[in-house]
Figure 1 (tube, protein in one colour):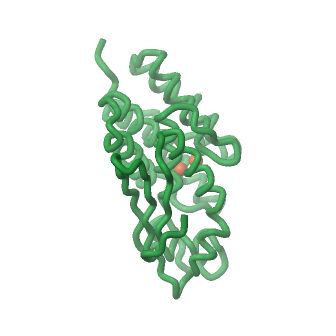
Figure 2: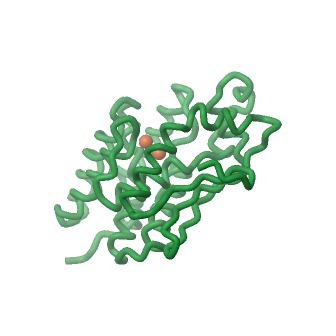
Length: 221
Ligand SMILES: [Fe+2]
Ligand SMILES: [Fe+2]
């Protein structure tokens, strides 16, 4: 049987339509960018984490697919969107002929990516959680005028750089941030992202790694 690749999923008409509309719906309720940009970034980051930790090629690909589809459930609404992402992904992946056992890994990851219910239930899910929570960046802010009113917009806007560093030997996964402190203090980052850091640490543990956070060259976690 042909294996289903990320490109096949990107080319499926349901993926493109639902992801586009999901982002429009998030925009309508004032959320940061949740469309193709976020999907691609999380897809690449999840795959990179698994690859650098030495997981098999197919597991890396399943990570990439999960990253791409994880927020597609926002098309029906924000509430429980991880569960809905799982159900939508199931339709697309089975339609493309993916073996049900692989589909199960992916939809389990999708349904467990969002706090407070997030729980790393497999390695694909663990990499997805870390990749998703790490995507904090100014390009996700839709309206610059909101940065003085909305803490999420302000913190996102203040992050000039964010990337994940994996050290396979030292067993560490590090989120590195460059924050513009004239726009937002590092404290504000913690105020809204503490729960994300806690779940990222749990996810790193699942991958037998410690989770570190470095902001403006200071190790905070
Ligand atoms: Fe999400
Ligand atoms: Fe996300």
